[in-house]
Amino acid sequence: MCTCVMFADQEYASSLPLQIALYFNLFYFPFWITAEIVMLVAKVQYRCSYCFECHCVTFVISLDVILNIHIQIFMHYKQFRN
Image (cartoon, rainbow, N blue to C red; front, side, top):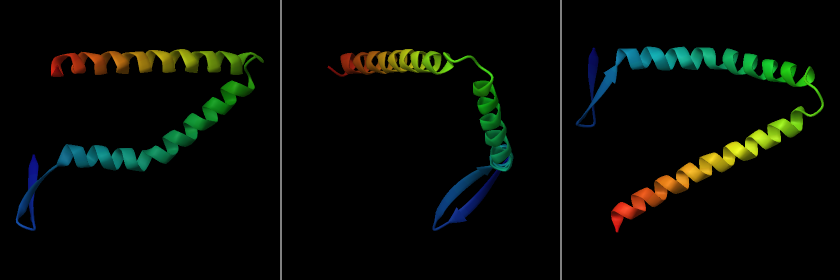
């Protein structure tokens, strides 16, 4: 289902399922983010003392993996350009 709108001699298409999904996400986002923050705070409070170190190590390893993947993708595309 698509609704077409004319604006300044250009035609724009609008999808009802997309509009519903955007409205749903916009409406429930504050509740979701609040619940997420409350749960994270509750988890950190009841964990042991080395929790911060575990999170730091996990973050550094994740960052390394993500950067490695991006570099590999960049080199792959660079190979095809030459």
